[in-house]
Image (cartoon, rainbow, N blue to C red; front, side):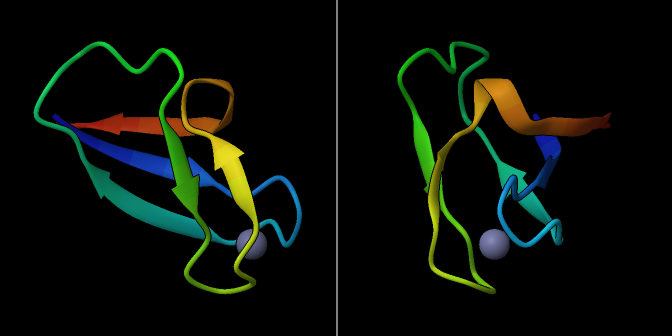
Length: 48
Ligand SMILES: [Zn+2]
């Protein structure tokens, strides 16, 4: 599953490849500003 995530801090979008559909408690470190955010709450788009 490929997701497009939106950083809540700098608003940049980035792709995220997930092996599982369960995203509870998973975090991503923004590649642009280094901010760590919850994946589940910041999904901009689900890619196929
Ligand atoms: Zn950011």
